[in-house]
Length: 107
Image (cartoon, rainbow, N blue to C red; front, side):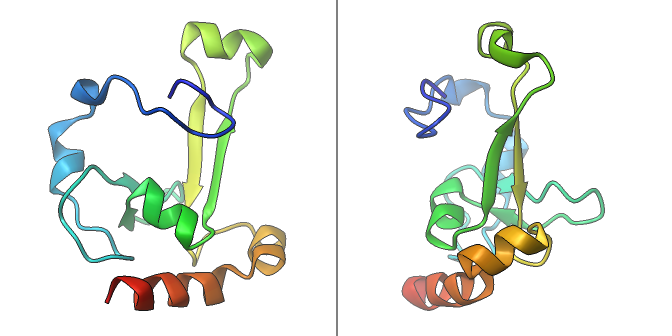
């Protein structure tokens, strides 16, 4: 990503593992485009970042190296499906309703 705040533009698309392009998004049900997966270690729910934004899923860039993380590439995206979003975030953002609306939008 060029801008970690706005999560755009997407850069180095050619470096995305081929397996990511074969996943099916649980929100739009499409198999086109690369998906990410829920950060919960026991969940494999896959979704497009754009679908996740529409569903108001939790998407945050995390680092343990402070400001230097942008330079050394150690930033990690924490992303959760609607079932594993942090509770407070889920309630504040009305994630379950937004996810239902997003699924309906893509029907």
